[in-house]
Amino acid sequence: MIIAKNLMCLIVLLAAVTPILADPPPSPPADDPVAPWTRGVRVAPVSAVEGRHTIHTYYLANPESPDGKRVVFFASRHPAGYVGDIVVLDRASGRETVLAENVHTEDAHRAACQQWLSGGRRVAWHEVVDGRWRVVAVDVESKARTIVAQDRQVGFGQAGGDLLPLYGCHWNPGPHRHLEIWDARTGRISRPVEIERVEAKYGEWLEKAFGGKRTSIFFPVLSPDSRRVFFKMAAGKGGDKYMAKDASQRLGLVCYDLERSAFVWQHVKWGHPAWHPDSRRILEVGNILYDTDTGRATRIPDLPTPKGSHPSMSGDGQLIVTDGLSGPYGGKEKEWGVFVGDARGGKWTLIHSFDQSRGARSWRRNDPHPAFSADGTRIYFNVSDGPFTRLMVAERR
Image 1 (cartoon, rainbow, N blue to C red):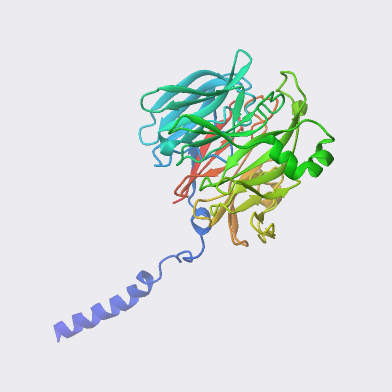
Image 2 (image 1 turned 90 degrees about the vertical axis):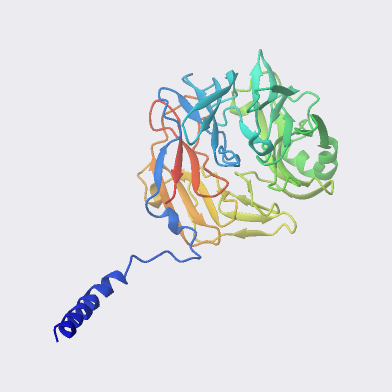
């Protein structure tokens, strides 16, 4: 009887406790990629070193190495962020390695356009030395440096590949009006798109847009598979004054297939385009996807469209990250924010809101320019909420 009574008490006790144990906090739906970014996101500076600017270049370039172990950034103690160092930080130890010192830039907006190349074995950037621009690449381990090209600037390649797009200085390109690509494996520079071909294909539009001015290819960006490239067109003002908004007139968006040696799509407006991971579609401001095969434009519904946005996508194509004024979307008035949204539309979250009015006193201001890490678990962005612009990282749980 005693055993039976004790057994009954145990059953009653388990019955009382079981509902509590069986009712954990609800898990996010398996098909909700935004959910991990809605709570418990940790935001912190990438570097612990204070008293300097630390700048990630642009929303089109993930500053984290393909293996996730290191971060590249531009560090500067110059008030405007015009002069500084190319630095690589080890994420595990926080140890920093300076790859290049006294690098002079065009502005603090994109800094030196520093970027990973060759699967993380190299870092490339551009700089001006004694009034002359050049593109440089360095082997991260050996520190061996290559002067890739003189009188050029660098577009954006893909961190996992060896190809680096080049173009002539947009304000005064001289003879370098074409699209060129440097292959880090061979050390050779090719010219896949000559300006004469652009003029032959889009001459009517160029005449209308630029009024007969001499144009050049500007700011090329390789697709994730490196088989396509998009670029802008520019008409330079000439001379050597590049720290000015009117140094050149910059318009349009042209997409070119490198494998087929063919123009595939053109649009009259350049907002802030970014490649979709499928290397076919292009994401633009306003959450619009352009299919470069068909020309069809599709708007992703019910996502924020903040002023000043620079949208880009996670490597798996499930998420969009962008920046912009956050006031209309839950942030404080005049603050900027970083947003994460479902690439199918509908669901989104504001992961961080901050003052962006201070930082580097550049003639062209620095923007957050958020970008996903390769594995999609971290987002890197710049914050200018104090005397220095700082590179931050947001990491989901």
